[in-house]
Image 1 (cartoon, rainbow, N blue to C red):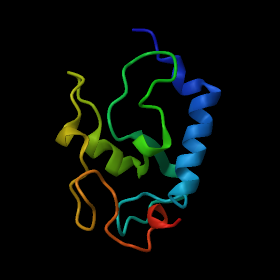
Image 2 (cartoon, helix red, strand yellow):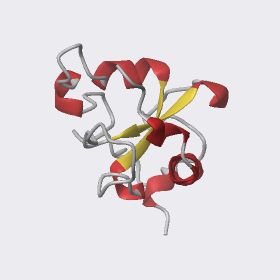
Image 3 (cartoon, rainbow, N blue to C red):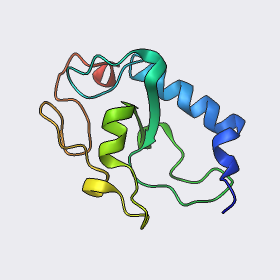
Length: 108
């Protein structure tokens, strides 16, 4: 199967950087202490497997996760996301948004 080229695009690199900056270069899961070099940028709502930007490729549909927390919601071989893409962790809403009002997501 051909690899999706979107994830090598300028658009994706800029979106990934903006996501990490917004999230303070840390996993959004409360209490996670994963080093910054092990972070990933995750789409909250699964994007279609296409080689160009879509309506899903926006800052509001991305979050910074460490490899461990990303694996909790990653797609299975069938293409369905585990836990329907929802992070079910203490201290976070079902969409993974931190409950902590001091988290960078809540800064204006």
